[in-house]
Amino acid sequence: MSHLILRSAAALVLAATPLLAAAPAQAAPQRQLPCQADIQKTDSDLTSTVTLTVTCDVDKTVGARITVGETVLVNLQQTVRAHVEERLTLTIPRVPRVCATLQADGETTTVCTP
Image (cartoon, rainbow, N blue to C red; front, side, top):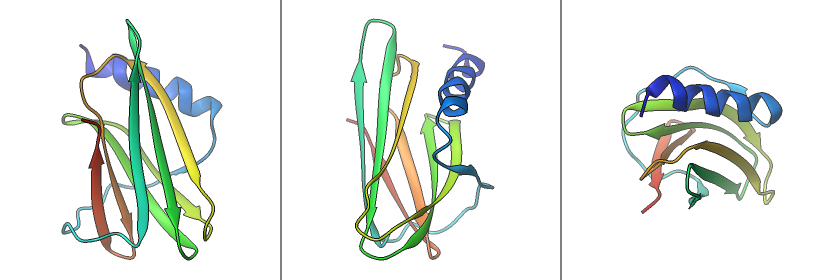
């Protein structure tokens, strides 16, 4: 599957969903994030619908990078209000596994679909 197709499909969904603003990629050591994160994937014959959910106990600016293998689909930043669930949903060509790496206060965590 072409990386360009994945990026194009994700860009179309994100253009219609201005939930998060673009953020630069940053490398950071893997540590515990001060927020709860979950990623779910539902497949149809041709597409995968991916939902990333983030909840924090206090207001936090959270960066999120969603990837399929080495391909970065989106790289975003969002202020998550305390105890308010933020959700981002993408529909992309069907893929076996998707991961999201989240960063806040210099700490990171990665969650993946099975």
